[in-house]
Amino acid sequence: MSKTDRQAMVEDIGGKKGSKEEERDLIEQMESKSKKSREEGMMKEIKEEKVEFKIRKEAMMSKIENMSNVEDTLFRELKESREKSLQLELAVVTLTCLGISLIVFLSLRH
Image (tube, rainbow, N blue to C red; front, side):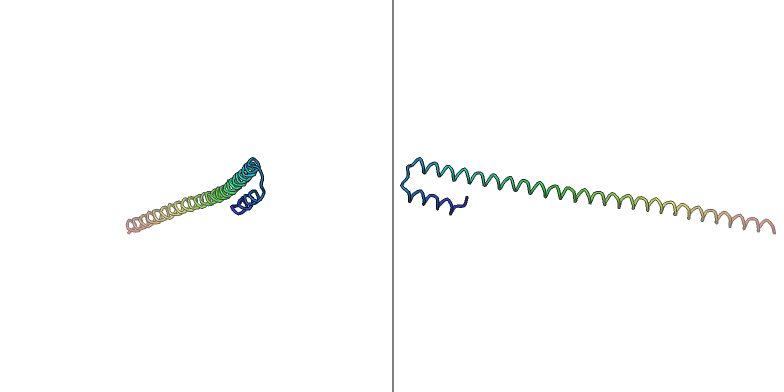
């Protein structure tokens, strides 16, 4: 309950020449309404924070999954690159051996 609402109620109470007990009852009612509205506001904030946390959590999980997929792709490419490199090395060694063998064959033939 806002401050102006409280003042209006107090003025209403002051305008009426009621008993002190009625004034106390009205004040207690105002305080309980104020307390309830604060509690409701806090609960609403907590619920909103839970929703925001859940959204952030899901976004982070999605990012982690994407990073995992990228990591898997990079490892696969690295493995393929190593295999190609080994194949090229084998081809170079094979051609070198073939060249040496050919040179030795031709040298011995003369």
